Amino acid sequence: MSNQSAISPRRTEDFPEWYQQVVRAAELAEPSDVRGCMVIRPWGFGIWENMQHQLDAMFRATGHRNAYFPLFIPLSYFAKEAEHVEGFAKECAIVTHTRLEVDADGKMKPASPLNEPLVVRPTSETIIGATYAKWVQSYRDLPILLNQWCNVVRWEMRPRLFLRTTEFLWQEGHTVHETEAEAREETQRMLGVYETFARDHCALPVFSGEKSESEKFPGAVQTTTIEAMVQDRKAIQAGTSHFLGQNFAKASGIQFQSREGKQEFGWTTSWGMTTRMVGTVVMTHGDDDGVILPPRIAPTHIVINPITTKEETRARVLEACERLALQLREKRYVDLAIEVEIDKRDLGGGVKNWEWIKKGVPIRVELGPRDLEKNSVAVGRRDQPVKEKQFMPVQEFVANAPEMLMSIQQNLYDRALKFRDENTRKIDNKEDFYEFFTPKNRERPEIHGGFALAHWNGSREIEERIKNDLKVTIRVVPFGDAEPGRCIFTGEPSRRRVVWAKAY
RNA sequence: CGGGGCGUAGCUUAGUUUGGUAGAGCGCCUGGUUUGGGACCAGGAGGUCGGAGGUUCAAAUCCUCUCGCCCCGACCA
Image: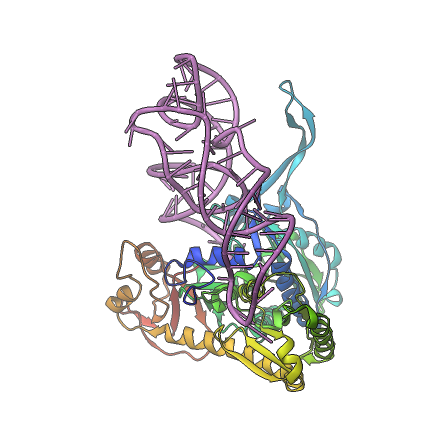
């Protein structure tokens, strides 16, 4: 029993299946009756809400405000930007009718066709652009710096909870600027926000940089991205920021009179982060016993489990738990109140303990009759083995709780960074590259590969070939100092190494 | 959208080849014994076997159609 892990299969046995089991066992989300759509349960939604609040504060701090635009986009608006519509065409959901009527067979059927079909937003560049076009008359109206939190729909063929669902939640920032330089700066600034958020809040080390031409957002001039590595060593895009040039401004007619009195098109950006981040956190930090949450985004930081097995001490134990909770709640952790829950449910102590382990609560506290006498508590950290409990005086625990949370946060980041670095290789020839990305066991591929830092001649043909051969793509062309070399596939000159990986 | 597989209780499933009227484990409910580590005993509830049609005295089982899910490919935050 003691060797058994809470989640079956283990990560090394079958990572995708492990992921599904974790999401279910931790009660983060479950598949719904609607194909491709998920029900986000309170624990999962709590994580998302924390992400939302914390990112939102960062948006505000960089001068952005929230607004809301329609879910439905007239087809003609959507079709204005050619690359854009082409990029999203295959995953559009389209509303074509209103009203239901009962037909001859007694079934309900759509009755009244719309004059113009409405696309359920897969992203809002076009509808927001149309609005901005009305708002922008003069350079004095710029910049416009807005964000919206909303749902979007992309009709996916193969959904996975949080990672790829037909409907998902996200935030999309949309800005207009007077000059190209300002818009490029904004694109960078928001990528920086994502990078900070991923690192400091979600404990995710990321590579940030630019997408290659073929991986770019449809309609963008430049797409920038933060890429994380999860425990099956695949890459996952955790946030993205686009410099849209004047493409959407021209498509939507966002024009203004410049300082020189000339009519000019605005320069726009857009940037987004999604509920996929929840899945990324699970896949990065989780272990064979379930989720491990970075304290900063955990809905509950500390769970107190009262040991009320003896009737005569029950009331005093519960009272001590309440006192402890009150003391903890007065403490601050970073800029957050410490969230404490007392699990008073009438279940076996072990059952409750394991539930919270699976959910990934950072700190579990047990308080029973024996602790009452010694004025101590038993403390378990989720980033440490389940068996390792520390016994300490109550006051010491209360005083140290914020530090302990910070230490867990740091530990998760350090582990993730170490894992990523251990699985990131500089690769300098084609043979090594192919070997790196080829599993030893072809029947049941083991976890293999990682990030390959390799030189590339910049051509789309090479990308295509590698994608066909290995399912490996260029995840990001990192910013930073150039390191000239030679393309490992063609021998042609290359300005810098790029990050190759299999991806979600 | 192409190729393969699978639908039996909330979950995992046995039974399908060779038709005979549905069984288990987990979970759930009740009572009791337990309780510092995912408890035990006893009792109980829960299934029109994905759906529709057909063959048959008889269908979870055979046939046809249909819907849904999973895996592999193409696409994606």
